[in-house]
Image (cartoon, rainbow, N blue to C red; front, side, top):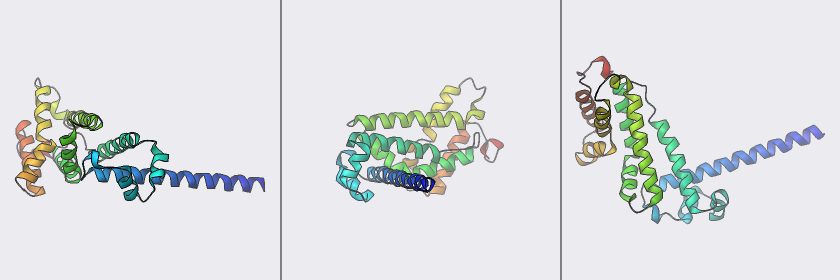
Amino acid sequence: MVTDMNTKRTYTMTTRAEAAEATRLRILGATVDLASSRLLTEIGLDAIAEAAGVSVQTVLRRFGTRAALIEAAMDYAREAVAEERRTPVGDVRTAVRTIVEHYERRGDTVLLMIAQEGSDEQLGRLTRNGRVMHRAWVEEVFAPQLAGRANADELVDLLVVATDVYTWKLLRRDRRLSRIATEQRMLHLLGALLDAAPGSSERQ
């Protein structure tokens, strides 16, 4: 009987913990989603709570303050972005598909964040970290192409530009090119930078 009670108590605690985690993730997801179309200063706890389907009290109970929630949401978004951008090392063609897919999903949000970075310290840290993350992604993904090059640091700078969100914006939003055309132009840029002819082994 005691064993049954302990099992039931453990099950109840596990269920509650899972429900609490699901609520936490729902709140974080709602915060990130709202930030994709609104200025951060315009996103109040009431809007976040409504989007997450919980009360403001629940939001505060989980995170304490709005600032703590925003910080947690930024960490949540960073983890999602790192996973989205995961790319086989040395595979240039897949790298282009991956980064364009990422920008298709989050590019407009990133641009909105950048527009606010000068007026919001939290966003400023997020965008600075984003730039560091992007450069690290370039250095990792293109490591085989960079190996042994005397101008590797300069080449990284240029590869960062060729795969930057603003390059995507210029092609996809300003020029209104299709996604396929955008990928092709990015691939041509990278090919020129890496001295790789179209269809070469570096581009596969």
